Length: 391
Image (cartoon, rainbow, N blue to C red):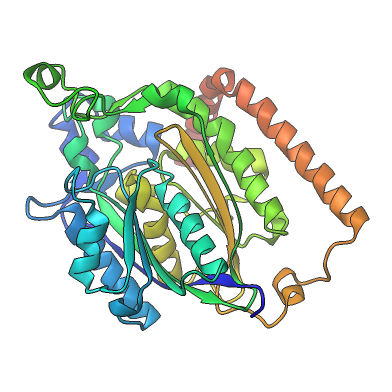
């Protein structure tokens, strides 16, 4: 048996039918559509109905992914569910999903890495397949985060939405699918994005409820700085370790947290905006579900074709970050066909390493300056908007 790879053979998503617009939120807290849109890029988000749960959303997205892959659930060897909003603390929603799908042969576990959870799950499943341990895996990113949002806090309630996305991974000897990834964590920033109450440290009590500790608390400025500092660097590292160059990437699918963050990351790395897939205006931040939802939409819109290279990047609670590069489709017969060239000789490797180092230095410099540049950046956006309006 030769080297093994893992390709995405199925994909699916689910978003609740109920839409909550910025104008709707303006009736709940002191805000406006202009305030939300200008700061986040979000115009609306999906909110689960009372009868919907993390399990039901994950099940629908998974069934759609399995249908695209054309395999029955009992052919799955592994199920990984990335979520920060499971139905219960015990049992894990992964086992409940396994039963609901009828995946009787599959091992199943829940993975919690905040908004980066899907990339952690995809990387983990890939390694099970690449080592020959399993042949087929289901990776799900799902969040019912609206029930953990404080609807009295306009700084957080405007950001989040509910949804689920899933992919099926299948082992293959063709050089395709996941080509490289990087994962990271910095627990020093744990309190920047936290639900302080409800766990074993602060069990639910009248005090926790009075202090609204059962809801998400976020230091927006700290999270913003962290995202700007890590996203570009992680993206470059993942592309580099995959054996590709940034110009080889046909589509970037980032975590949909804040459009200003995505714009800054694109500028740092020199990525043309038309190569970025952005759907944050319609869904808001769906945490671990955002990348698989965006990936599924990109496929349906024809943004991905056989042989395309994709890069995904995310950051989240923990604080965590991750990036992953993959080749779309069934894959060619040889490694040379993946990269469109012979394996790199030493001088080319050195040149690429030097180029990547320069890009990293640029990102690090921009990250340090970004808090100072944000007012100017916001001003430039307003000027461009006024110029466009005046045309």
